[in-house]
Image (cartoon, rainbow, N blue to C red; front, side, top):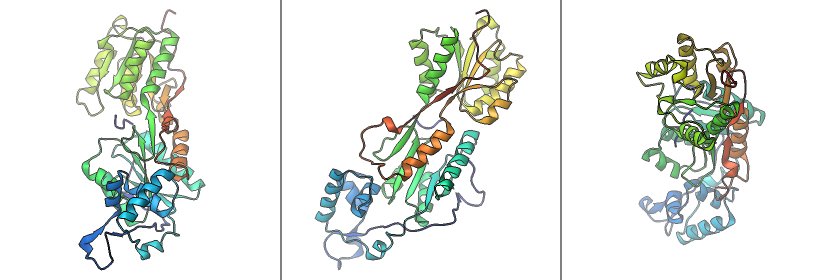
Length: 367
C-alpha cells in the first residue's frame, strides 16, 4: 500500500540548505582508456549485472559501510571483470562528504507532514546536519539533489512509483531511505504500520464495550486493520457502518452527514476516522448533526497532531506514528553506519502506531 498521511517554495521545487559538499562518483571503461566515450559504462551497468542498486555499487567500490562483505566482494569481482577505471577527478572529491540530507515530500497539504518536517529539521540541526526539502516530482527532486552533491535522501512513498523515478533511483549515486510503505526494493526503509495502529483503536473501543464500531475513510491499510480488528475481537460487522470516502470526493460531506443523522439505534456507538484531514471535516459535521462526543459517539482519529484537540469540546483519542519517534528513527536510519541494505530483518524497519487515550472515548451509553 502506498502512503496515506508539506510545503515548498513557490519559486522553486526545493528549499535550499546553506552548506553543501561533494560525494564521489565513478566512470568505468570496458577495456582501455583510449576507447571512445560510447564504449564507457556506468555504475548502472555494473548494478544491472550484479542485480543490485546504483547506491549499493557505489558504496561497495568506495569502501563505505552499508553493504555486506559478501555483496561487496561480488560487486568488486564484477567491476574487475569489466576493467573499470575510477574517475580520478571524482576520486579526489571523496573526502568532502555532504552535510545535507534531501527530503522528498508528497504534494499534499496536511498538518502531519508540517509537524513531522518541523521535528526532522530540529533533530537534523541538533546533529549538525542541514535539510533540503523538495515537493517536486520524485525524479526531478533526485536530479536537484545530485546537482547539489547530496548523497543521502529520504523519500516519503505516497503514490505508486513511476518508471521515471525507478530509473532515477537506480542511477542515484547515494542512499535513498524510503519511508511510509513497505519498500519493494533492497535499500533501507521505514514502514509505518497503519494497519496495526487502527487494529489498536478497534481493540481499545472493544475493551470499552462497544459492539458496533464505524469507520470513516478510504480503502487502505487502515481499513484492513479495522476489519481485522472486528473479526479478532468478535465485533458486529455492519456494511452500513463503513463510510468509504476521501476528502476529494464531491459527496464526502453528504455521506458523513447522512450517517451521523441516523437514529442512534441505527448507527454504531463508536467511530474511527482515518486521517487528520478527514477529522477536521468530521468534527465540523458532528457539530452540524448535533451529535455529542463521547456521550453519543466515541471517537478515535488517526494522526496525533496538536491542532486536532481544538476541534471539539473534548480532547480526541488518537492512534498513529509518534512524530518525535518517527523523526528520530528517520534521522538515525539515514545517517547511521550500519544501515545495511542487505539486512533481511525487517523488524527494526517498522514504526508502530501509538494509541493515546483522551476524552473522546468512553463506554457506550448505558454500560
